[in-house]
Length: 256
Image 1 (cartoon, rainbow, N blue to C red):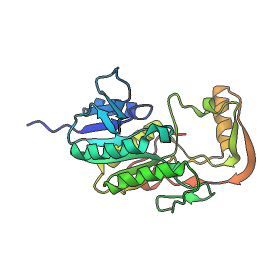
Image 2: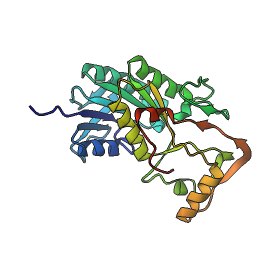
Image 3: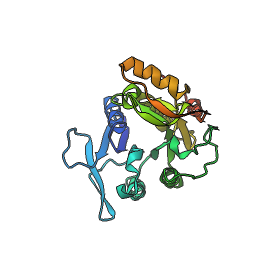
Image 4: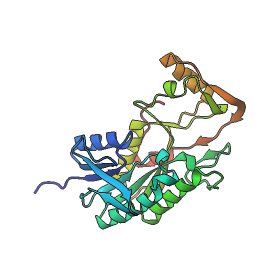
């Protein structure tokens, strides 16, 4: 008898979810990745949309791992993000999901200049934190797991381009908390592979934390773009510790 293929459903197969789908397809997995469009460019794509207070979807992979990679910018009130997530968790249960993994954000942590790890208490002081925290709690209550991702960089998200010439609403001495796309994908697979022993929450942030001034100057020089300016030069060492996930055998392999 042949071996049973691993199966994966990715909610939000966009900038992060799409290459995750492609990688696992190349590894021989059965994969379905969702988007909101009606037309599909790839065989693995499936439509999923929240409408009339329910999920309209084309998913049919039983016994699959589920990864929610819907980006934070989609988590505004009019996106129905939380309603979509809650119904997706219910759907995953009905489809006998092997596990549900949420890609969250280190923006869930407060703004204070501290070193944050997965045990750091979270005090909600901004509207941005609340939906992130609520989403995480929904997943954790359902027995799922959470990855809190740092600032994402990679193809089409080059820091030397997206900050060029801008005035940034932060201090030049603020520490960066970034992570490269492929490291995130590898982290996702590491947690799925070690699901039974993995902790409920991991930060995924590259261990390098240069200041924004140094980091963006280097990146802008690399691309020949104008360096950004900052509204402050105050010390601001807010650092997210992403080392705990290394206990699963995961290693950060890509420079930020």
